Image 1 (cartoon, helix red, strand yellow):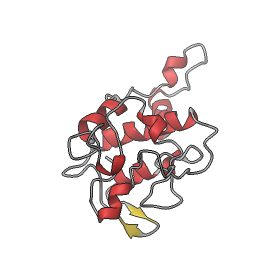
Image 2: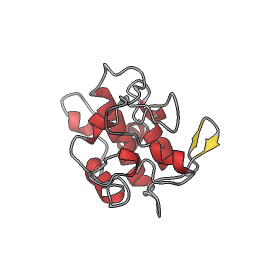
Image 3: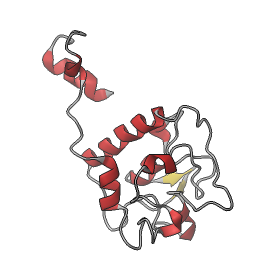
Image 4: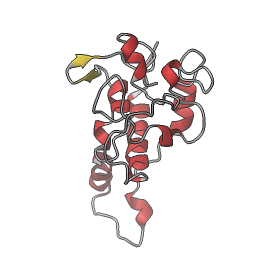
Length: 165
């Protein structure tokens, strides 16, 4: 949102509706699902067949497995919150000092961090995919028989353990 204001300030006058592309901020250089696969979907992390705590960030349609799903390590918080995307637990885990209701949790991805630009791209993607699932209004716990899909699971193993990417 701030980017749009910045664009308007840089060009002086607001663009007209006849030029809708003028409202767009420069596209993210990252394809977010590809970024998640590359940074988090590694063997011993969140790969499709060897996923830490069942979180697969490598297979297609990752948004389906994140939007509205409760983080098991942070009760009441959705991995991607469709009602309040900026409060999504996935974004919290990427932040410099992530916490769950005041309790510190490990930053993701393990062994490094995303750049501020990459995190901004993930945040924009979270906003976009949250809007695609308006019917998911509250965090939904996983079914007991379903495969885990939670970015919060690894925090159960201790701070910094393979959680959220």
